[in-house]
Length: 328
Ligand code: ATP
Ligand code: FE2
Image (cartoon, rainbow, N blue to C red; front, top):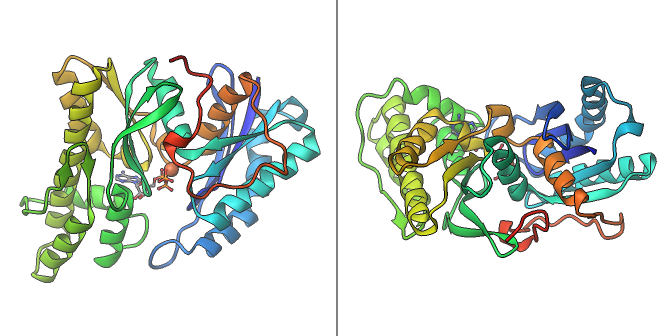
């Protein structure tokens, strides 16, 4: 089976094609980058409408496939920004109708988790999903992905993006802070906000900006924010691991690109005798291949949705969707 997946939940428009061995046959992505400030949903959606047709062409060409060889079209139904979701869903509906192939709706968070899981080779790992909008520790149980812990306010990536824009940088902040943190020397004290298996970041954002006002360098701030925020994520992951006793931990989401986070979680997991896996950067950030792969898993179990019933779900949570392709 070969599935084409369309991703458009936020800043990135992307089309990926995968086969049933989870081989990424092609991936074509284009990220909307605001000149200043954060994402404007309608501008991002306009960007997606403009680039998606070309990305579909590029993905087919990259995989050396014609549209006749695509068995299903998957799209990210939610969660995400309404106008952005609508752009991708519209393209997927058109392809499904034109090619006469089933349309499959996919949850974006589950897709981050499933692509990381299949690449890890681990059957039932614990998952740390750290992205712009989401920060969740997840384990599978009773037919769904269960959120064991999560952010109580903003996602860790949004926190990094907001901080970076406030200190004069441009979106996305995560990779820029990672580079800047290399130059940091002093570990500044910041609020460490862990509540059981949950975390919060808005207090750290306020405190970091106050330190900047008082003259802290961007490098020390970047270094301190990374160490503090990623220690928080490592702690809640360790707590969840102690409770759920999984064989390993898999990272997903854009913030999982971060080498410091990878290293801290790896040290923790390996210290407990487990294994840690994180996908390549292009498969950590938003991408069409993860949507295609999760659509393929669902399609193998017969899933499809009519165009009439394919409405987007901007607030669809990870733990709201059934995962019939997984046992237990
Ligand atoms: P979601 O809907 O899953 O929350 P998203 O729209 O935020 O997804 P992703 O591509 O999964 O999109 O993640 C983007 C986030 O990842 C941004 O906040 C960005 O700053 C962050 N990020 C990307 N690379 C790095 C990095 N190297 N270090 C830290 N953060 C990073
Ligand atoms: Fe994402």
